[in-house]
Every structure is written in C-alpha cells, then in structure tokens.
Length: 376
Image (cartoon, rainbow, N blue to C red):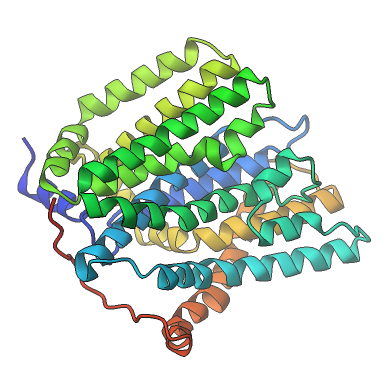
C-alpha cells in the first residue's frame, strides 16, 4: 500500500512543464558513469567499460520520458503540438553548445595538422552514429553518436504522437509498440546478416526502443489506468524480479541474435528502474541523494559536460598523457569545469533569449501551465 507522500511522487510524473524531482540527480549519476568509463577506457590495454554505455541508455529513457511529458502537457493545454516551436526549442537547447565544442575541436585538429574534418561535420548534422559504423575517423568525437540518435527521435516522435493521440491512448500505445518491435526487428536483421555488433548499439533504428520505453512511462502517467500500473511497477519486488530476470538473460548466451533480444529486455528493465528510482517508497534514501544540490547541479550541466569530454579526450590522445587513476579524476573534473563554463556562458544565455528569438520568427509563444488536464 502506497503512502500519501508516494502518491504525490506519482503525481509529479503526470504531464507538466515543471521539473521532475530526482531526474537531475539521475542525470548526474549517468554523466559521472559515462565520464569515468570513457576516461578509464584510455588506460593501458584499452579496456572496455560497458558502464558508460549503460549511462547513455539511461539518458535515452530519461529523454523519452521528459520529452513525452512536455508534449502531452502541450496537447492537454492547447489540443495540439506546435511542431515548429518544438523544433526551435530543441535547436536553441542543443545547437549552441554543440557548435562551440565543434569549433574548438576543428581548431585543435587544424593546429595538430589533422586536415580531416568529416566527423565534426557528421556531428553537426547529427549523423555521427552512422559515420562511426561507416569507418569515418572520429578524432575522439565518438560520443556524438548518442546525440544523433536523440535528434532523430526529436524529429520523428512529435509527429507520431500528435497523429496517434487523436484516436486515444490505445492508438498511442499501439504506435509505441510498433516502434519497439521495429527496433527489435532491425537488430534481428543485423544479427542474421552478421553485421558488426556496433550496428545494434549505435544505429537509430536499433536503439529507438530504449527511448520509447521512457515515452511509454510518460504516457502511462497521464491517465488513471496507466498510473495504476505504475504503482504496481514501482515496488521493490517487481524491481528486483526485473533485475534478476535480466541478469539471467545476459548469462543465457552471447550471440548477436541473443543480444538483439536482450536489448529489448534492457529497455523494459530501464523503464522499471526509472519508475522505481522516482517513485518507489523503499528508495527514498536514494532520492535524497539524487536531490542533493551538488547532484542537481551536475545534472543541470550534464549535456555540456557530455560534449566537452570529447575535447579532453582529444587532448589526452594528442599528448599521450599517462593515464592512471589520478589522471582519470583530473579529466572528469576538467570535463565538469568545461561543462559548467559552457552551461553558464552558452546554454543559459541562449535559453534566456529563446523567447525573443521565437517572437522574431513569429512562432507560437510558450504558456507555462503546471498540470494540464488530459483525459483518456
């Protein structure tokens, strides 16, 4: 039986424009996981740390959840989605820090007499994931693959949602299931064709189900029957059972075809993880940690930090730094410092001017409503 305070936690997830408690802290956990994994991978022998990939996948679930929450709030308020305004908000949010980081990267490559700027161009146009599997030299910009995946989601998902929700929540769920199955089918096709396993981890069509899992959580939180299901999911036994089943699944095999199916299982498990971290009453201590001011701050600067780690990696590889535990800690700290500088000098000023730029372009203006009403 959930306590009253836990019902408030579930209510925080329903469509709205306000911040969801603990999400910034969870972002902080993910970016630290990514940073330590990426820099530890530079140790002698180049060991692989899959924890970084897990951090990115949790980012995907969070993105799907938050973007769907905002879009449903707009539908509840206006009955429609202003597609051009949505794309413009994403552009202002993502492009200025990315352009700044890519300009610095191109300048460094020019100084190092590396006249190969193809991958920065791939990153700018959000096709880095396909360029990686196509063999284009990345010059430490490998991490841009995940930004490409998210941008493809931002372009396609609003159109899918605004079309399907006209026919009710069942149609929305059907569309989400269709995308989920399409991603599984794409991975199966790559596995049967014996393509490199990187295809299944980096190609948009192969990882969209992870983002869709977050979208499904947001849709469920927007109507009564869905919230009832979320209450059942946000319990320790369900969380533990999902983790155990996923672990047994991993141990059951390691073929490409097996991994294709396990990626879908991972999507479900990450959705269960997110709803439990946000709402499970037994995880209150974890939420207190996630809502610590330091974690919230790191979460706020996580996007810029994710970008600028690429520059730190480029410098390390250029000067052949001696990579050890001390260097890893210093590299993480430097990435956070550059991320903070980008957040305060680029991200926030761009966000502050977004409304003025929107008016200049004649786009519909944003109207903040905390909890628009949705029926379903």
